[in-house]
Image (cartoon, rainbow, N blue to C red; front, side, top):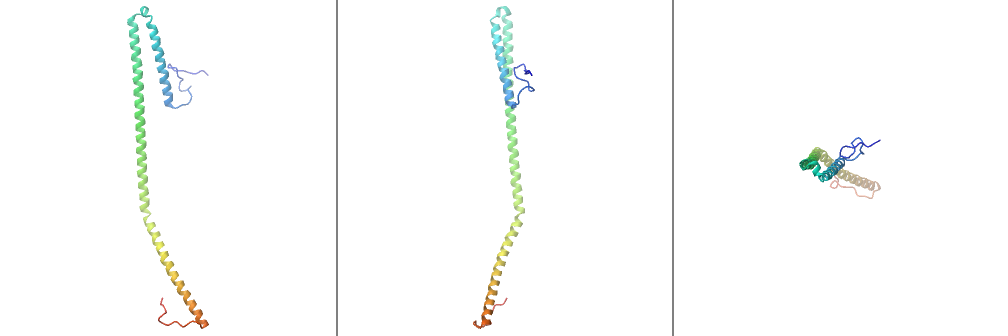
Amino acid sequence: MQDEHTPYGTKTPAASSAGTPESEVSKQWDAFQRDLDVLGRQLAEIGTHGAALGEHFLASLRTRFDEVKDRATSYKAATEQEIEAARRMAQAQAESTLDDVRARSTEAAKQMWEKAQPLREGAKDVGEGLLRAWGELRASFGKAAQRLHTEGQQANGTAPVPTEDRRETT
């Protein structure tokens, strides 16, 4: 299949290989600049034949060529400025969106922390209750062990009978 070329010497988008749009545009501008340079050289060569073509015609042709070249350069600069402005705007929007997401995420985390406060307090109360219960169980097991020990000694007749002063009421 033959390559289809634009007037600037580049392949048409349908026939070009896949690449970034920026590189394709850059290639097209480079090809356009080369074509303008070739046209400028050709105009200079025509200038050597000034007598045959007429000086006024050649000056007019040279002026129009310079105008076209200047407009192409200014158009390229303006296009690059627009692209850069769009790039900056997109970056600013992305940063703004990221800042918004961070703020919402922080706010959501704070809300979750506040909602979980009763759960944390409940867990703390449960832990304190378990400590109290463990202390009471330990004391109860100690008393029970003491009673068993005392009853065992009384059954053997080796231990003195506890007096009313030493008994604890529960």
